[in-house]
Length: 399
Ligand SMILES: *Cc1c(COP(=O)(O)O)cnc(C)c1O
Image 1: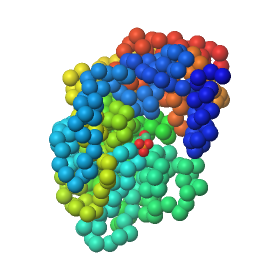
Image 2: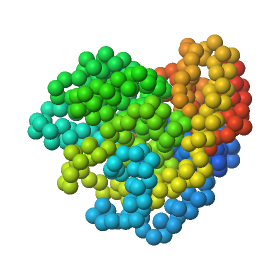
Image 3: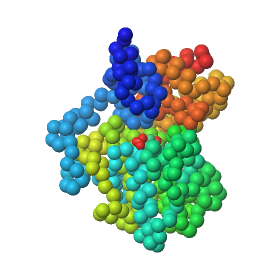
Image 4: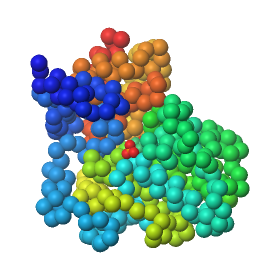
């Protein structure tokens, strides 16, 4: 029996079966490549689901974490610590918002944003039947609150009753959003670029109209930038390219580049009139190790000009993907922004293509029911994109 098989068998024996995992056992990473326990090399266009933006084995990132581990890993939020002060300053400097609350995951960032929006409305009128408008085909996480605003029956149905007070509207359809607004609406929540739903960027006119509607009705705009934020689309946050500012933004995934950390970030109005002492908390959230990771990520992104590099290299990725779309009739469309791209597949199972790519030494992901998803580490260079396109071409030619 191979080493891989033993590890896979042991995992399946003890871990709750909520994932149908691909039969690969990764052991280590270097730059934009991953290696399995048999030593096989994989070019990584998945980045652990849009998480590991810096490339594997970045020495400065590893050193920052090791330094913090040697000092103190956890203190609780009953006390102050320097990594929290530094990480929060960097989040605010880059988002141009006002206050941040660190969580352990993306779903928890959504939970916090929902609570902040409800408290904001409660502070204004004292009533407690406020509503949130969320989008169909959205994804915001698996906890009950985050699931309640995730517009996907497959994820929701087995777990009803969910949190009440949620209305769903059609993404990129302003009339649908406007039609869902009532006196009770406290927030409109959307992903600037829908990720899990199939890589759908918001239309600029749609997003600007939603912003205007929120301003007119004193409704909070919550932008979920958990997947599309942190440089992925070629600007620090996807909404920057639209010139639209949210009242609350959620972050996670690349925020800690692998150390579990998320955040919800509020503008001054939302921060001052929502959560106060006693309203929200977390034991681990924003602990010294997580904050050291966030701090290092912002520093390394800035020092290496990573966001600008994504903007510069992304047209090359788009062109290479477009070549494949025009070559194969079962690839019907490419959409996306920056290093967050999707290709629509018609008449062939996407999972089989992902599996065949793995066998070829290429990690790609799927999204929605029929989309190939490309969310590489942000340090991906042209030569790596060439290698990806060559491998994928060879896989596609055999479908
Ligand atoms: C991944 C994701 C989440 C959930 O994050 P977790 O860390 O898995 O809880 C929420 N929103 C978006 C847009 C995501 O991509």
